[in-house]
Amino acid sequence: MFSFIKMLGSINSYIKSKKWLFFTVLTFGSAAGILISMTAINFMTKDVAVQTYMEEHRLDKRLLEGFLISRYDSLLSIAGIMSIHPDIATHRNLIKH
Image 1 (cartoon, rainbow, N blue to C red):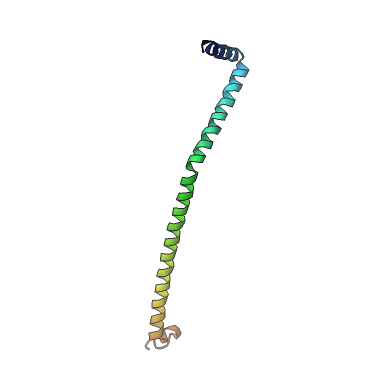
Image 2: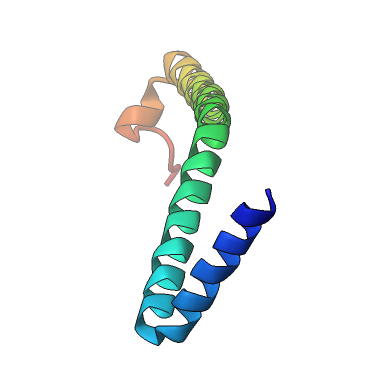
């Protein structure tokens, strides 16, 4: 165990003595860490994203149905008024001279 730690220390000192190697290892290590963490976050949040999308779809569908029902009801009320007073469509007898 002690020889392993000593070996790691010697590798560390060798890398620090070669500045280009030190910065190369540092760059690739940080890029690999970012890639691994982003992959882990993607795997953990994949189900949450699907559930959020489905909930938004359900909410939008319900709002659209409510909007269409209200428009249908308003058209029915207009049609009811038109059936009672057909002169409204032709503008007859609306303005008394």
